[in-house]
Amino acid sequence: MIRVAIVDDHAAVRHHLREFLQGCPELEVVAEGHNGAQAAAIAVDAAPDVLLMDLVMPGQNGRDGLEAIRACAPQLAVLILSGYPEEGHALDLLRRGAAGYLNKHCEPEQIVEAIHAVAAGQLFLPHQVARRLGLCALAEPLQSGAWPQPLRQPARAAA
Image 1 (cartoon, rainbow, N blue to C red):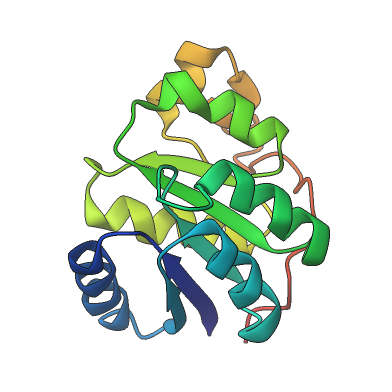
Image 2: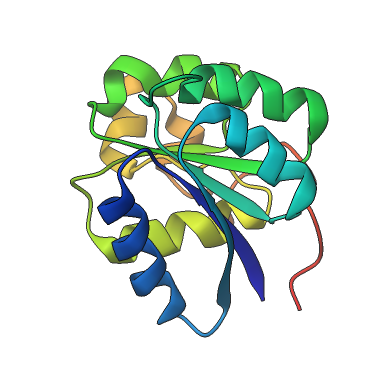
């Protein structure tokens, strides 16, 4: 079971994400919040495996929230889900410690794919974005068919 927390300032987005993710038997939504400050508290209090977070929120935004999370829960996989194009923010957020970045216009199944990847300790970007950013190791599997080794250890072993 992968424990997921959702942080987005729009209640409707949180609701629909929760409803969709609860339909996946291997995922459990354990907490929700609406800004970066709540994200850091959730990282400690709810101990999710993956924190799915918006980038632009009132109060403390996702960028600031990411820095706070890295300070209090450095192994937590933070997956950014934003309405902004990936190319403008993805590389900066990966450098700051995000485990992945998706645009809110993606297919819901891609969110589940990304959650599984980052919970396993891998970085996640859509293949076409990784190629455009020149991150070939993220864009193509290795010749053996395996993905690159994780950059961080998963928060806990998958059950």
